[in-house]
Image 1 (tube, rainbow, N blue to C red):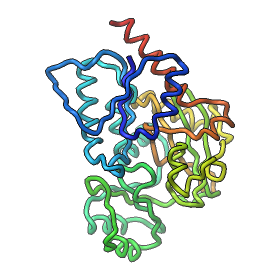
Image 2: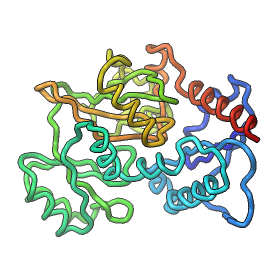
Image 3: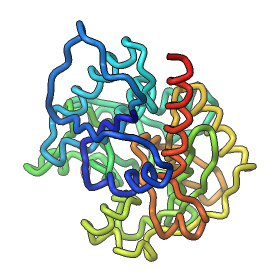
Image 4: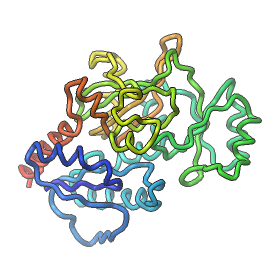
Length: 309
């Protein structure tokens, strides 16, 4: 049995379609409350982690911590978790993502984490030129704002609407001016490059590619045509190969990894998404069904677990 651990049911239909297409048995298990009894064994089977770092924006403030403990219990009990505790730790902290990229020699924008308004000002003072803020536990482009100077940041921090994000952890990050107004996202499943996608930043930084997100926000047109397009990037690209090696080393079975390219052709990687979603329009252009590839990964893992048992 495949157990799908999730928080946002709006993202489930494409995954369910992939699982059904592969003829795989599965159960949907919401992780927004519940009980963990470490004296008991979890149900047999394969578990898929689909927890989103933006769960708190949907009223599920405790889901992220609950999932962390749930993954610890599952792995302690010997259950195979796709995108398990190591991958989850990376997805929930952009600072840890920066450290992972350093481990693998992948260029990233200069990044500093700070807790507290005065600490944010002090951190920003060490940057030259423009900088951005973002939530350390992000998702959906949360907390991303561009600043030209400290005065603008101070004014923003004094705004009653200022949101410091979960645990008050915010990042100050070097702003990379793109050569063209888009970022590139590389999709990897089970060590395999699926495709790369360009996401336009003209309308803002909320770049969730799922069809469900597109329906819900003006920045994501319903057909995806204005926001997302297929990138010419291929598996042979050295950066893609670096991503594949990083995924293997860091326990990332599934990842959508984003980078931006400046006017000098330098590419800076800044985000790793484990709870990745796919744009149906880009999938059609690439001739790839991302969720079915995830289903095949789960099916292979299920066969392997049954063989061991």
